[in-house]
Length: 208
Length: 73
Image (cartoon, rainbow over all chains, first blue to last red):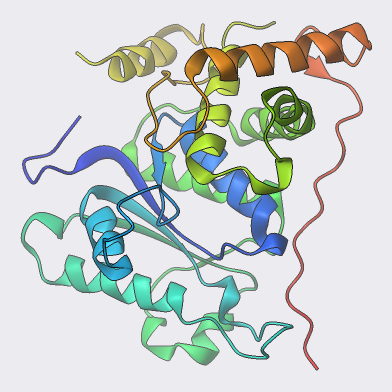
């Protein structure tokens, strides 16, 4: 399904940390988007290595009707003791495109943070926005992403508990599936992760 | 009408499917559909043989720990 501007009406751009400690939340986010019938898009998608990263991100945002931005990583990291600016930067890029009007004025955004009101302290320009706090918990992440898609699309979607249970089942089978496929569980590329989640959800439709 | 839209309508209409999904090609995926299906089916069969899979539910799913905020000095 594509809009007049060539955007996919089912694509959801994911802007979040790609760190090890965030992996379960990232996987829960992509799984929930897929379980609701939408397609997660990320800068981790395989693409042309010659393409400038900034161009790739802009292209993905423009190609999506929805986007999710997690600003959890504004807190100082343990290694460099510095905040990560990539996520707020990409959020700004998205809001800029939306504000510029035209084909992207109806772009729909979900902004997440770890703890309520953290971003008001470090990014006061965002104080007018309605942010959601996930507290670093997978169940809250699933519920917030699912409920946001439900509200914005008006579609009947699987419930958060149903998605959460399926996600736990997926996580339980993933190491064995990776082992059988001869790939490392710790290093599953984003496109393969999405494909495996999709396959699992499709199988779940036909199981008890 | 696309398969996805048809599935969503079907899902809305009678709840016969749990998730409104369709298998699509994801660019950059490293396994073929057949390889992925075989690996996941083998994993499911293995869990079922161990008695950890009963009617689509997996017993002993490890809890997923909440991610922690980075430690501050």
